[in-house]
Image 1 (cartoon, rainbow, N blue to C red):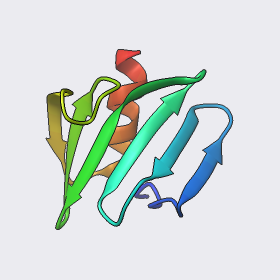
Image 2: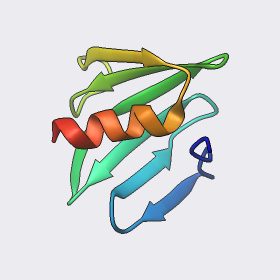
Image 3: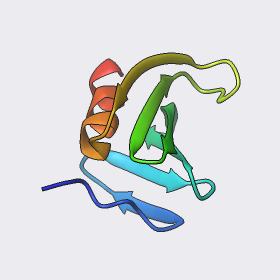
Length: 76
């Protein structure tokens, strides 16, 4: 089952939080730290690790939003 794309801000207490920053950009936060960003381009999720969207390092491209979130959480 694919991970649901969250509304503008969605809280997931066990895993942290995914904030929808714009139509195509999401921020993954856990324990008050920004783990990284997910940019959706059509059906592709481009995952970048780091706290600054402009300087973050691209770590993964996937079509699975849940995998994108999990990748950032696992790297923390």
